[in-house]
Length: 126
Ligand code: HEC
Image 1 (spheres, rainbow, N blue to C red):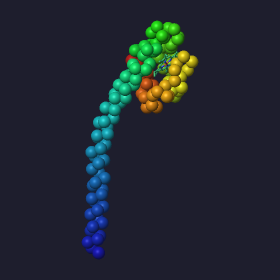
Image 2 (tube, rainbow, N blue to C red; image 1 turned 135 degrees about the horizontal axis):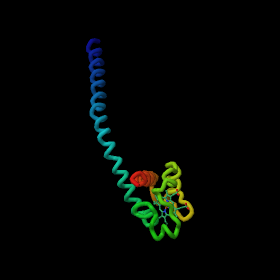
Image 3 (cartoon, protein in one colour; image 1 turned 90 degrees about the horizontal axis):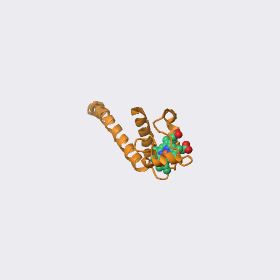
């Protein structure tokens, strides 16, 4: 009997120690990794923008391209675009609007979110 009690007691202290250790190790690790993942998303958004959007919207997003002038493309850095909610930007990129092509069939939802973040980012720098 005694040995069983001791066994359970030992397992309990063992388990509490065990659950404490990952917490101590992983929490700082997660905090460390978080700032590293954000710029990775930004870089992916910038690369996709350059590949799929810059020919119309310009490398800087201002739409000052021959195509921009022809299609009357809005300046993505302007307050009119920046004040739109995230959901509106995501919807326009995914579904398209007038001459703006849809990208839901060409890009993943994650890439579209990264593009939305990228548009926010260049809007802030402006
Ligand atoms: C063929 C040229 C073309 C390409 C390529 C293109 N766009 Fe557009 N985009 C347009 C046009 C034209 C509009 C204006 C649509 C309207 O309001 O009539 C527009 C509008 C937008 C808007 C909405 C601006 C507003 O007024 O709210 C966003 C956001 C946007 N584009 C993002 C993107 C992103 C991100 C990509 C790349 C994945 C992209 N566009 C690729 C032509 C293009």
